[in-house]
Length: 103
Image (cartoon, rainbow, N blue to C red; front, side):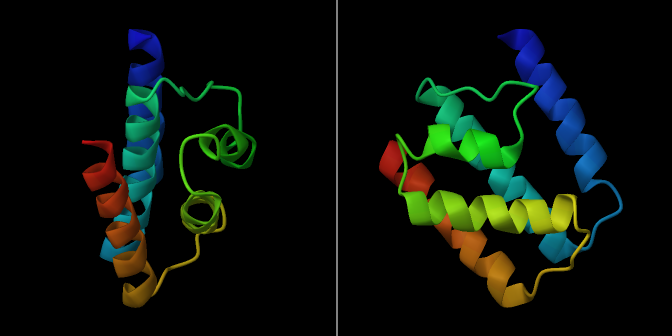
């Protein structure tokens, strides 16, 4: 379990490095989603893609929220697309709502 968290942390550092503020917001929010999911017993395998893992997250979170956050993450991390401030603010708000509901 500890090794998984260390590996996810390494992936996060590699993906976030050298990004603009909006991209960092999207990436950080997605990793917060993974952390909240982990606290609820849904852990991402190192070998599952974000898209594959999203189906597991649907069991504990609203599917629309998970889909929006996963797609934004993939666009930034893999597509190297720069999100707008509006999109970054929306994703940040979604993860805040998930955090508030989980406590």
